[in-house]
Length: 217
Length: 217
DNA sequence: ATTTTAAATACCGCATGACGGTATGTATAA
DNA sequence: TTATACATACCGTCATGCGGTATTTAAAAT
Image 1: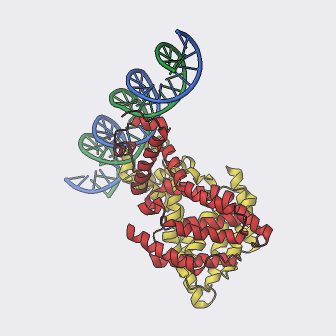
Image 2 (image 1 turned 180 degrees about the vertical axis):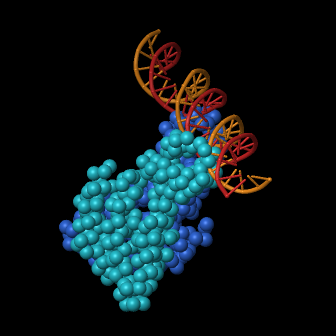
């Protein structure tokens, strides 16, 4: 294949294919050769020119998945018109509303047999999302009086861990009814921390989405 | 090597070595050959006689890890002298007390780069421990009046998920202080559900253990 | 009760093919 | 003319398959 004037296009094409295959078949059950085959006229040398290893591709894939979400989180985190609690509420609303627009959601991956990808998401949630997005919001909430806790770091972790992992329909595929119960228990948990941020509207939207997701599989 | 009259011994020897290597180096970075080498005079064929694949060994390893814990859970679950809430409290106390006796704890594995093993534990927690051990206890608690919830399944999952995964020092290695904060937030979460089952004694013991674990690494 | 025989099981160790990764060559853009 | 974007050929490692052997078990035959 002729050399591409925009190497970024090639990189994106590789990530597109790798992304889809990692989702469908799982990282460890996807070979470099399969990626090459589905790339159409690109060679192994091309891939190893742009990525230093297979794992490096996975990192890039997860970065692309979390990237868009993180930009949304940053935008809400940096708003000046909301107090801490309101920001948390906004985040959950936005997250739910944006789910069905998400490319990841569309491919409906099942992460059950995809330990590498799951762990990437899991550790990203606790080592990046919690300290860099949720924690600042909780600290603001403590300052502005909308959130009460003596342990902002642990609380940030717990909330986002439960929301991003336990309630993630891509990680644990329950029935729509089971998931709805999870959401309500999550709502109760948040209320226990004085955070009444999950309202009826979000719950209903979540339930709809779970049904859509289930039907796509 | 001479044929062993008790094949179970051989199987156990394989699991011993595999277990240690999977913990120390991670599943994917442990080769079958390494297991053979450390086995002393056993061959590749022997392993594939007892296990149908490398992954099959991992399953057996995780079963052995969770087995002892599950027997403890079953024993408490089936007691007749405790109500639901008391059983939950007993479980947490026992889990904490038994931690340092645990062989797994002694080898001090870091599951950060061991996605396969981590996922095994994670799904075992939600698909086996939650429905078969915690859920019956919560249901009993509803009946005997010691626990109030309309969503026993989801609550069982949430509790054990947070306790076994988020608070697991083998999965997320925080400082002793960070972990102590996690435990307190967990205590608050449980109180939010009307479950005051984590007392000072357990908290202090947990903190000690975290220090011991950290020093072993 | 002892021996014979048949079958199942434990184990060996080499062959194989797949896979991740590398070294080197080549053409094109800058 | 140099750096970059690829192609091609090749390497080492690894999980796994498989043909074969030794040993145990159990039942049949003596």
